Structure formats: structure tokens, C-alpha cells
Image (cartoon, rainbow, N blue to C red):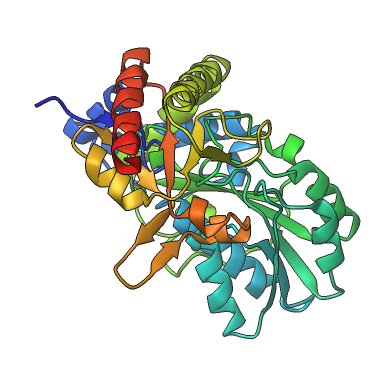
Length: 379
């Protein structure tokens, strides 16, 4: 049987062929330690430096402001815990939003148990954070604001530049989890006005297990852990050269093809929506209609259960649910709850996300499969 059509690019992405090609020498022959001063360390050392420049070029930062990590979760942990520790003399208050990824929310809950006060700002019914509400939440003890660049479930893009102006005026650091936005929309740190930014490799066609954290020059953070002097002494441990090379190449491709990829993904997403809309009744789109990731379609089917739709389409289309329905309860995502999506809609929510590899044939096939499943459940 043919493989299901993949419409879950916000969960993870396949490896780009160019990324695989760039990594291959470091899997097969260039095995040296980049800290070694002899011949075998030369190529890995240069590869890590080149990758750092490739990530910096995509973000519009300096190479020395990029620290390689194991992924978005580690980057987020270090940004929040690091600021809380390093700036404890200034304050102990962090502001974030109710729709952040667990890699932010769980860290905030951990910090709360350790004496840090956290304010969770609400969002509107489109999943948008209000810069005004962020400003109202600021106190004399606020040291960090952490607001995601774009939401992983509904795709809403947050007004970071507006929030950055508030943070700068009040001498507060600003972090953003950009795992979902890097490679899909512009993520230039100067335009966003952020001091720290998290990147996840597997969201941009690089391997799982690698990421990066942008740390603006002048920001003092503790070391990730204790050890030797890798990553300019900030993150000890022999570098994951193979995957760092993959991340660097993925960032180079993202920068090179950004406009083309944005247009393609949005065309695929809109074609998918229009096809479903024509065939299905009682549907709604979640997220901001304009300020939304070009690849993300969060769509709700009134009165249906998402897991039942997924059961019907599983062998032909791969997608995610916004709610899980059990015999005794319905678990609606925290994002949809924060947006106050009515339960009759929220429980029937699918997240359909397109990517660089998505074709019109994929979309047309998925439209037929999804609409057939929805119609059969409505009968």
C-alpha cells in the first residue's frame, strides 16, 4: 500500500536531501574531534564554524551569538532557567503566555516551585497575545518576557516587535521560542527585537536532536553544565558535528529559499482548506486569518470527535488532533482552551500542516479522504 499523505510538518519534517548530503562525510569519514589540533580535527572544526555562520546568517545575528544545543527544549530550558539564575539580583518575575509549548510552560512551572513568580498572559479568540496585556503584567521585579513567535497548533504569529519595544523601554530581556517559525517566515533577531531565540533542527528539515540558542552579546547566562570549554565555554561536551552540520545546511537552505517555500506552503494550505470547505459543512478555522504561519491549518468540525476522524483517515493521511476524546472525558488542547473555542467545535479539531515536499496531488487526495471521513461521521 502507498504511504499516507504527510500533513504533520509542525510535528517534524523529513530530512532535506541536501542536508543528508552535507552530513554524509561526517558520518562516513570525517570522524575527528573538533577540539583536536591535528589533521583529523581540522575538517570537523571548520564544519562546526561554518554551521554556526549558516545559522547566524538565517537569524541575522553574529556567529558568536549562536550556541548549539540538543534541540528546542534544551534551548528554551536554558533561556528561562539561565535568565532566572543570572538576573536573580534584579528580580524574580517572568511573563509568558497561556499558549506556549510545554517546553516553556513546564519550565515556568518548575521555576514557580523555586521562588520565581510567573504571569501567564491570556490570548484572544484568534490566539493572539496583546502587547498591552504584556505591558500591564510588568512589575519592578520582571526580568524576562518569553512569548513564542508562532503557535505550533493554530499558527498565529505574535506581535513580537511591539512586545520588544515594551521590554526594551523597561530594561527587560525578551526570549522567543521560534521552533515553528524558523524556515517558514522571516526570523531576523534585529527585526523581532529579541535577546534570546530558540531553534529546533527537526522542524526545518534537519535531524532530530540538534538545535540552537541565540544569545545576544552582553547577556550573561550561566554555563549549561560543567565540563570542558566547548561552545566558547558556554555548553561543554564534544560537539555533535554530524547534526550540527545538518542544522547549518538546513538554515542555509531556509534562508536561500524562504520566499519560494512560504508561497508554496501557503498555496498548498489554502488549496487544502478550499477543498475541504467545498465538501464539508459546519467547519471553522482556528487562528488569525492573516497573521498565521503559511503552512498551518487548524480546522474544526462541529459535533465530531477528532480521534474518530483520525481513525478513519490514518492509513491514507497523517495529521494531528487538537483534542483527544475518551470514554469518560474530552482532553482539549490548552491552546484551544485559552482561545475559548467552544467544546462542540474544539473536540473535532485537526491540525493539518503542509511542507516543502507537499504536492497538489497530495492535497487533492487528502481533501477526498478527509471529507469522506467527515461526511460518513455526520451521517
